[in-house]
Length: 85
Image 1 (tube, rainbow, N blue to C red):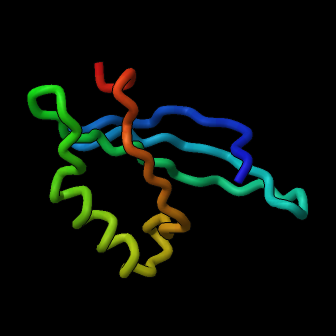
Image 2: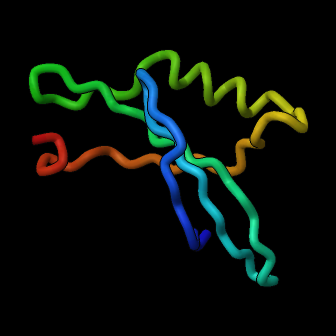
């Protein structure tokens, strides 16, 4: 997915939400929401994601409603040592 445009629209306890626009292979533009979740660090070590993050992902996978953004994909990467310092 190649994202053309991103704008932050809000931040909360567990992450930040962005509005994005991407163009698919046919040239059609789509609006999407991107949520970057905060990761838990304790004593300088990576501990993972908060439990409510997993709960939110689970519910987004189950819900199919016109007023709720459909979960399309999940990308995950573990922070490097240089990112956590």
